[in-house]
Length: 362
Image (cartoon, rainbow, N blue to C red; front, side, top):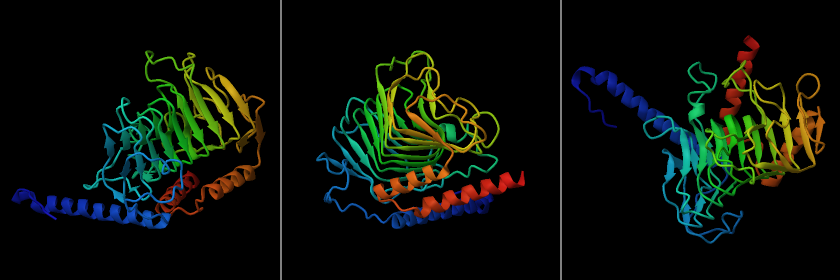
C-alpha cells in the first residue's frame, strides 16, 4: 500500500488510502464467496462438456474468470466469440473502491455477429435504503449488461441490484435462462425497438418489466419487429427508489412506445406477478402495444380489489400466490439453481429486511 501525499495532510489522506484498500479487500472476499457458493469452477482453457447452447459453440473463447474489479468493455468482438463467464463475479466496485455503473458493454455492431455470453454474477454495490441513493442517481445511470451486437445470445447470467438489467441495442438478441432481481429501472430495455427473444428467464423484481420506448422522436420504426417472451416469469417489485409517485413503488410490465413504432409482442406460457397498483403506466396492455400471438399466460394479482388493467383472453388472472411460488420452484428445478444464492442471496435478504423495517416504522 502506498501513500504519496504532501506532509501536511499525510495522515488524513493515508487514512483514506487505507480505507480504499480495505474496501478492495472486502470486495474481493465477497466476490470469492459468491464464486464458491455458486458451485462453479473457473475455466481451465479446455472446453468442458457443453452444459449450454453457448458453450457448445465452436467460436473463439473469451474467458472471464473469477472476481472482477473493472467494467468489461469490448469495443470490437470477433464473429462467433464465446464469452465464458461461468466463474466471473462482479461485487460492484473497482480496485479503488469506486462504484462500477455499467458492468458489461459489448459494442461495434459491424462485428461480433453470432457471439454469445454464458453465466456470470453481476451485483450492484448500492444500498437502496440510503437517503443518497435515488432512482435518478445511481440507478438511472447504471446497468448490468449492454449488448450492441447482432444475433447475440445471453445465457444463464445472474444480475442483482442494478438500474437496467439487460440493455439490448442490437438486432435479434436472445436472453435465455437469465435470473434478474432488484432491478430499479427496466429489467430488459429495448429502446432501439429491435426484435428480441426472452426464453426460460426469471425476472424476479423489476421496477419496469420490458421497455420498448425510444429516447427520441427520430428513432427507427420497429413495428415490423417482434419481441418474443416464452416460458418466463416476470414480477414487479415496489422499490424505495421511484421515478415518480409514492415510495415504495414501481411502473408497469410493458413500457411501450405509443406512436406505433415499437415491436409487436408474442407472449406464451409466461407468469406475471404484481402486488400493488403502479405509480405510473398500467399493469395491463398499454396503448401502442400490438399483440402478434399470445397463449397460456397467467397474471398473479396480489393487490387490493380486482386486477386494475386490461388483458387479452390469453391471460388468466389469479389471486393465488402459490401459483407464482410454484412457478419459481419449477424454474429453479429446471435451471438447476438452488433457492439460496450465496453472496447475492445474503445481500438481497439484508436489503429487503431493511425495507420492511422502514415500512413498519412508517
